[in-house]
Image (tube, rainbow, N blue to C red; front, top):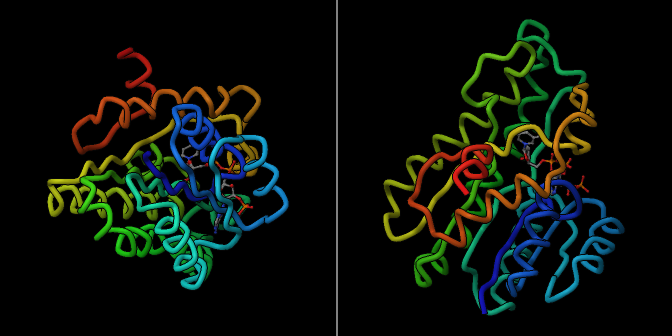
Length: 226
Ligand SMILES: NC(=O)c1ccc[n+]([C@@H]2O[C@H](COP(=O)([O-])OP(=O)(O)OC[C@H]3O[C@@H](n4cnc5c(N)ncnc54)[C@H](OP(=O)(O)O)[C@@H]3O)[C@@H](O)[C@H]2O)c1
């Protein structure tokens, strides 16, 4: 039996990834700050899903997540999916409140790294995998996306170095593309015009099923390659 920890599993991409892996027989641990929505999602997904409510930026919550993964028999896959836009409406860098970036980086950069550190010994033992969800905003110069994009770029660089340091693991960092989710709506984009997160999830699940080499991927390319 294989076990995955997916942060931000109560809706959007994280939920779609959790549902896809649960269908394939994986044991899943998910989190999210909103306990009611998280437990409802776990019940809807069905199968063997453990919901641990909390904020990934909280060290005590991260410890609870690694305990839940250990209780499930050990971890094969960590998906750092939970993320925040930071300041909304998205500001130009000239107006970006610098203090807001502390929270953005805590959630989008430091929490993923701390979770990786917490589960790394177990992942090494099982030759497991890490999937970090990033964004095209990490590599493109989109106006107003500088604060969020800087965090995603940092997560990409952590992923790149982790892949070099841990050759026995698969380390993927992936741009899911635009998705019809609360996050895209909160960014002020036309979320209804975007595809549902299940499409990106189906593409990204190929990383896992085919154990593709460590590296940066775009869901659109993975979908096109099928
Ligand atoms: N949507 C897009 O078009 C798009 C494009 C490129 C990249 N991405 C990336 O894809 C990932 C998923 O985004 P999404 O669009 O699926 O977002 P979403 O629909 O807003 O879902 C975000 C999930 O993460 C949880 N979450 C947020 N902050 C958290 C925190 N501090 N601690 C624990 N859980 C937290 C949310 O639950 P709670 O709010 O209850 O905590 C929810 O389950 C993110 O990393 C995002 O940056 C999205």
